[in-house]
Length: 266
Image (cartoon, rainbow, N blue to C red; front, side, top):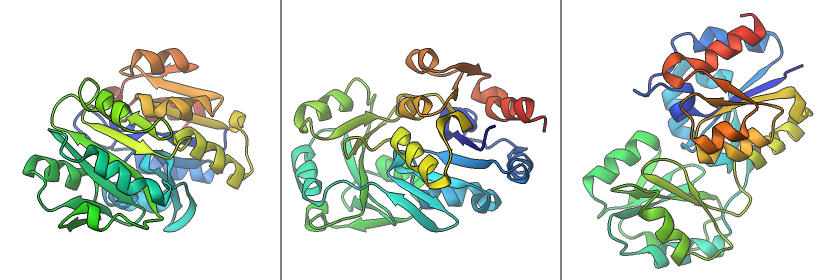
């Protein structure tokens, strides 16, 4: 019996215009009445997710920052931060890269530099509700013990510009993850949605066969592999479609909610 359902946000639960399904709140409440937890699993910041979900925020569990942070009703269940001695070297090695801009993603706030270009700041504000602007990131990155990841925004196509560059200049001991068209996340090795899902299963006392998950992009791959009932969206990357047990209708067809309604007769 399914006890937990996890879904990615962008490209999965949200449609192409970033709209939430209009019927998601009653569906989540119906699931809770059946003893099923609903999990939002996203690369986004926890504070931004709470902002965007509104009334739904207290009804779900958040697997935020690509799995580095798990929160439930403002309670931190798990954090998997970057080692403190890696933060400054990451910023130093990537400093001055043309068209690439870092965000130091702490559990409570995202740090960006005052000199950042306007387009980058606009994108940060979209995904990070709690943000601090500092004069120089190098002046504040020593000793930080709650950095979930360092996200890098690319002014162009991250997959063909930023992603290979970061993999080249950063040590192999760090995980470099393509998380969107314009975003690459640098995280602690092994920190991903799949590891967080396994931790959540342990916390809740359930196994993979009691879990469903929906995803569309590369940062969802490990999460889909951590559950028995895995769904790739119709619009998902080929690698994700190949890895999933099932294919759900696309995000523009309200695929996540349609599958849940069908499976649970809601």
